[in-house]
Length: 381
Picture (tube, rainbow, N blue to C red):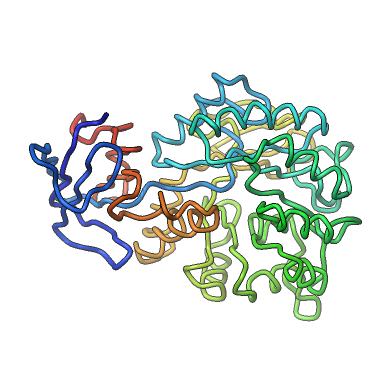
């Protein structure tokens, strides 16, 4: 059991707003309403305390792939992201052979059962060859509900989300099947029209996989999926805020139309996140990372990102000009609510897990706590 403590002096971002010179009590693994007797006081004057980050869409980090790494490698990738403030993470798998993905789901399900990850996201193989991005075209499949169900069942109740090109044969039926099973159907890597996207939302699709990327651009006569996803209040839109995937004006457009309550910042990170430039494999495809930008060796398509959520947070506040509270919503509260985990994580409230990030005045990470224990201890510098 982690020792009890009181974090004092920081600007603390609560659901009700930011409290200057705040105090946050931690009793064991949970946030407490009052400081327990004998609690250690940690002076965080001049810092911010925000909820731990929640990443809906993450393929790896620290040189490790969630799609192909060993259990030890996957744990290394998870830890890499924890060092950058992500205390809750959904492990994403890229397109592969269905039997292989089913086996991977079994391995990842074990980590979910241990509490290391919050579930599994299948990004592919049920996506459009027209918008495949960094996915192997020969392994793509139409979203036949029986095939989609095979992967969901292999995850043993830990499938959180499946990205689909819902315009393909079986797409709408798969959306309904996923919704019935409590799995998020996400529209992405799609060539759908506006009308086809509206149909998918009506069938139960609730997420836009990295909005703007791997889908038709917005047109004034053919508004496409972007418009349908932005205008529907039931849809949460993922954004990769790394300065590569999106122009700042596109991010502002998304926030303006969806509002801060419907945006979830994600990393879409691959192995190189928190690791460095070089050659990597993303599923069966070779990726070159140069200057922190990941592209396929064959064809040059952007291949995920090397982003960590602390960088997405800092960019949102210092470059995009978002209020800190809106950045917190996009990085913590919104994805936690979408995953059905808001009773435990996503905000700093008594009774919830003591998952939090300490940021300095420049919005750089100085401390990370997960379930009451320091992953990065601000007192150690």
